[in-house]
Image 1 (cartoon, rainbow, N blue to C red):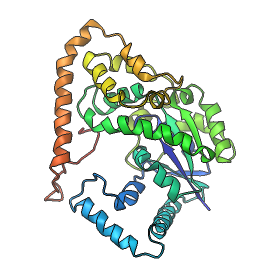
Image 2 (image 1 turned 60 degrees about the vertical axis):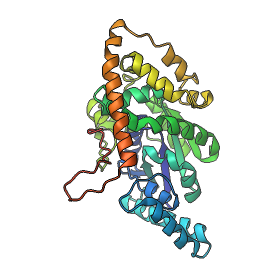
Image 3 (image 1 turned 45 degrees about the vertical axis):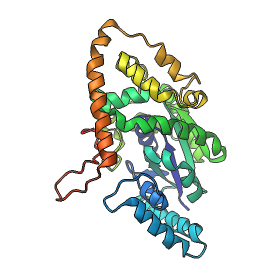
Image 4 (image 1 turned 30 degrees about the vertical axis):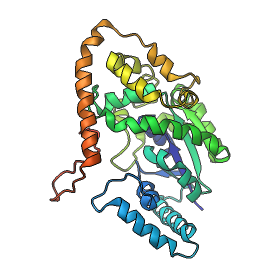
Length: 329
């Protein structure tokens, strides 16, 4: 039977790069970012999901329905697993052994996935949080703090969730650091193939530019910029975050997270908060502070608007205020 394979990572952690590598192997099928399990798993949870029909009421109704099933929640979860497996299999047109589901915000439901798919395998992909934030700003904010508040939970929840889960399922998981992956991709791919018990094929690293993953999500920027794997982006965070307001803001986000969980995302096991506090600030960077403050204030206001004023589109062509398109963030 086909096995589900999941990559758990923060957004902008190199998961699309890893996915492109694995997609070239004959035993791995994938699509860009399914997002399939998030609404399925959370449909019975009174979580702060926003929906036109009231997610809270829907979850209460579904819980009532599930409670009347034979064996209740166990039966419900089994049918969820069967449904997802059937869709994964339908995407695997050449009988691949694994279907790789790479959806960064699955960090919300790692334990649920582990329970629903007891035969699944996990790859935890870590990247230094300072690099993650810098990549978010560069890729989705055009170098500015516009929309940055949208990603606050990725930092404050995603970092501890991924770090804790990586030690919770040792028998079926493999942990990799992005910085080490790009430094020696052939060795890491061989290690991954061994973990998955599939024939090693490190040649996929050299043909990564041929990877064509169906779907609209992922990292089109990286795919366009790099035809081969490179470590060129590893130190870019120093320039992107070298301003007083940015240094203060990211430090504020990182501080509530336990130091050992922050350090788990750094390839050397050091606390990224210390590196951020020690980041030199050029004199010219202070002139950037007013614009950063204004950009962040607007981002906070936009997030608060979404939280307190859900509005459904009244016409098919009218965009929702809940749009998460990075280009408009």
